[in-house]
Image 1 (cartoon, rainbow, N blue to C red):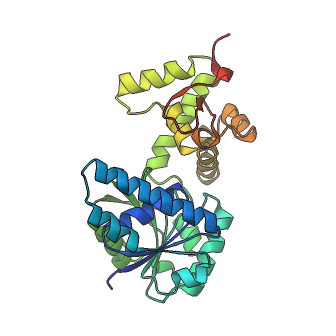
Image 2 (cartoon, one colour):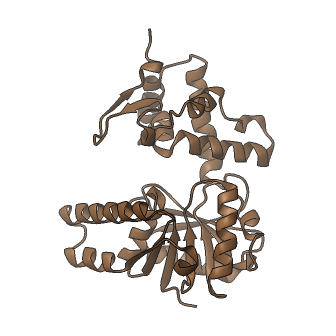
Image 3 (spheres, rainbow, N blue to C red):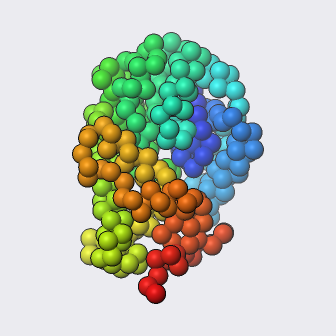
Amino acid sequence: MNINNVTVIGAGTMGNGIVQVFAMYGFKVVMCDISGPALERALGTIQVNLDRMVKKETITVDVVNQAMANIQIETELSKAVKNADLVVEAATENVNIKLDIFRKMDEGAPEHCILASNTSSISITQIASVTKRPEKVIGMHFMNPVPVMKLVEVIRGYATSDEVCKQVMSMSETLGKTPVEVNDYPGFVANRILMPMINEAIYTLYTGVAGVHEIDTVMRLGMAHPMGPLALADFIGLDVCMSILQIMHQGLGESKYAPCPLLVNMVTAGKLGRKAGEGFYVYEANSKEFKVSTKFLKK
């Protein structure tokens, strides 16, 4: 089966990034979200990102025009998936929301259609269990920012067929990505390793070993990380980090995966990181500048 028509569910940061990449590589893409304004904002974001690539001379204006022409928007899921060869769900990292979306995707999509999830931690096997096509359900975990990051973590559920896995691996390569096949266990590979490190960095702050700036500087300069773990947590979203840790804690049953109490308190207080304007750092609107939150400055 050839994959020509792609539907992406969700117009947030991950969703619009996935749409952009598929559209740039010649796929016809339907971007679906329950919010019309969210879809319009996503189109604007994609246009800005593509225009920036033109200025950097990495693509031409013709590529931009063709990519934008490849994108349609739709607020009704049933209409969005009816002609799809592949659907990629990129909704919020909430198991109940994802299960509900997959039930509807399964009901509305053609029989041959592959159903993929961009989940960063939720079991593909569990997601597949609410469909009538578990052999065609797979994980496609893109990294943020999607147009820039090369990795796609391809997660095989318990019932995912070899054929579907091969198709998704091959298609990921056509998008200029490097796919890596992993099995369906809590956190997969990326977050199984990354989230405990972030959680440990938060514990290091929580127990007073060092401050925010100091922790991030050690990891950037000492371990050659492009971004410190606390800045990275802010970039991902502290609520997302906590959710992933909770899923791993529940699925693996080990206390080392339990979210640090400081992380829990920050999420409860709405200090979710970059998207909320404050987390471990404070972010100025429409600026790349940020500074350590006064909450964590030495008194």
